[in-house]
Amino acid sequence: MRSIVVAGGCFWGVEEYYKRLKGVISTKVGYAQGFTEEPSYEAVCTMETDHAEVVEVTYDANIITLENILEHLFRMIDPLSLNQQGGDVGTQYRTGVYYSDPQDLPIIKAFFAQEQQAYSAPIAVEVEPLKTFWQAEEMHQDYLAKNPRGYCHINFALIKPRELK
Image 1 (cartoon, one colour):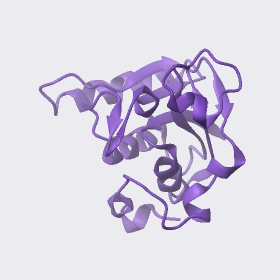
Image 2: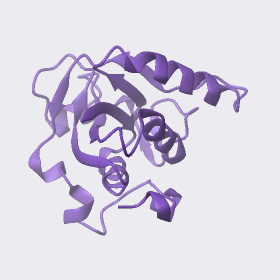
Image 3: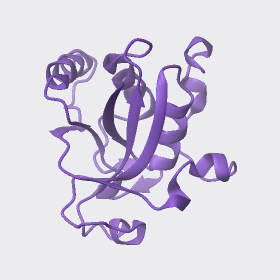
């Protein structure tokens, strides 16, 4: 099993999107890259903790590759938008890829270099080693499964039928 932490705006939809993919074993929403220990959702929303809303994606690399995980992130986000996805605005909604395994970095860099060719402006998605990860409150875990009419900026139709569990 492998894992990567991604940020794509509001973590509710990003988590639900990844949960639907073949090869994804589990997901966990949380807060990453900030300086406050054990932040709450309310604290993160003040934009004073420097945390991003993120999803830890644990996956079987024999079924879905890191490149595939990144491809899906780029399907669901606007990679040129800084601190905003859909109607969500603020530093907690920035986009990013945060890795724990240094062997992931060359794969991430190669993917980003290829993606950049499609854009005239620079990609605004952060790529950093994972500094911190704090699991979000239970009410945010599997939020859209618990609240099917909950707000979401993600278009789940971007997942091809062959990619679904």
